[in-house]
Image 1 (tube, rainbow, N blue to C red):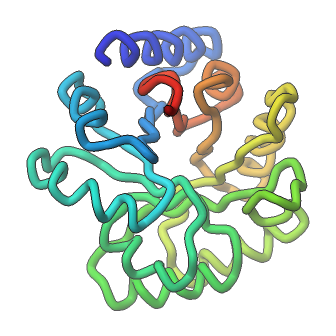
Image 2 (image 1 turned 180 degrees about the horizontal axis):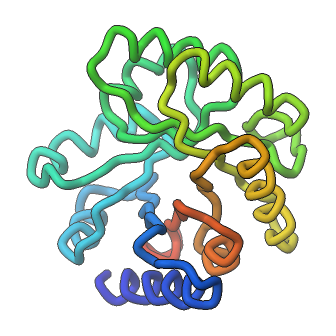
Amino acid sequence: MSEQLAIVRAAIARAAAIARRDPAEITLIAVSKTRTVDEIAPLIAAGQRVFGENRVQEAEDKWPALRDADRGLSLHLVGQLQSNKAAAAIALFDAIHSVDRPSLVDALGNAMARSDRRPDCFVQVNIGAEPQKGGVAIAELPALLERVRAAGLPLAGLMCVPPAEVEPAPYFALLAKLAREHGVAGLSMGMSGDVETAVMLGATHVRVGTALFGARR
């Protein structure tokens, strides 16, 4: 597990050097969805501190014990979030990468108002206009960002999942352009197969699963 982590970190550092960026600016999120506690523990032992899960319930089953054992761990929600799970997500996660609709913004805002926790929020953009994927349409992004700011959510950046099996660079470049236009700093983009491209185009957070844990059974 330490070898896979070293390989991914080296790839990030290599891409950052090409882009004349500091690799310390890039957060590696180890996506541990469907992985067991026994699979996750070696990566923690190897020094990985930030993890990502897709579902609130799965994270609730796995992470309280892991975090009790190591208070330095950070947990990010990288999958879709139902509005009725907003309070549970706020209680568990340090960042939410899939804010994509007004009803969820309102639910998160109301839940944060009743809590002392304020996780970072990334607005997910449906960068390829794919009907099967979550994310706000590009044309509706300005209104949603305005709503996020009005609700007082901690706006950390934009997130995207480009269409599969096509060159991701244009989509990453478009997300970076949208972030600049709207004064947003963070860019959650890039996964196992395109992490170096994402870093060269400005990713601040990369979400890597397979390259760290291996193929899912």
